[in-house]
Amino acid sequence: MEGLYFNSTSQDQSYDYSDNTELDDYNSKLYFIMKVVTCIIVAVGLPLTLVAIYALYSMVRSDHVVPIYVINLLITDLIQLCFMIVQVAPNVDEKIYNIFLYIYLSALFTRVYFMVCISLERYLVIAHPLWYRFRRTIKSSVVICVLVWAIIAVCAIRFYFFVDGVVTPIICAVLFLLPFPLLIFFLVGTLKALSASTSVPSDEKRRTVGILVLLLLIYTLPFLPFIMLLLVTNYYIVTIVSQTFLRLSPLADSVLYVFMRKGTIDKLFASVCCCRMDSNDISSPSV
Image (cartoon, rainbow, N blue to C red):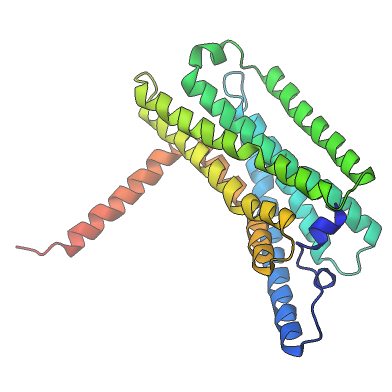
């Protein structure tokens, strides 16, 4: 498992190129740019994620438990940001780096399955409101979160002690790919339920669809290239795309807090509509 991510990192020792001077200079410049971008992401993402966790914690109540899943999602982002700090830190001991590596990979697995939890919760609210109303509690949500963390921890320990250079990447790719059809199913099912529902307020419809679409994008952009990287490790462009989106993903997760707040989507649509009206007024000739 360790070798998997070494092939997908931006560190100098992860590349095995020939002694081509121009190519070495290009790789050095690229690594420097990625390091600077990583430092910027950590500097912006760390306080932003902490603020989002605190704000979401204040939103948790008995009839609104989805922030619990989002908080756990943001905790995985904190783990990712800590690993990014280790990546750019100079002279890191190899054992310490490997420990953070496995913790980071575990956080990635946990992250995608908390996305599924959020999508499932939104789907049940719209498609099966009566069933969900009598079963949603903070206690049940906390139990689900503990189970997700425990299962991923067991899988991480298994991968740490039993690593196979051929089988392990395939297993990891399958585990990362499993949430993809679930996210699509929950989005499509929610859209069908919303089209037939008349009791759900329009602002709640827009907020739910916005959350599900954002989750699908947050999953698709970073993890599909990363799955390709697990299966085909010699594609340099796939490595760069995967690493770029994975490092930006903590910032994207913080946007979920915006969608969790009531009225935010309406204000966004209102501002867009106002901008369009203003542009039409300016472009229309005066009589």
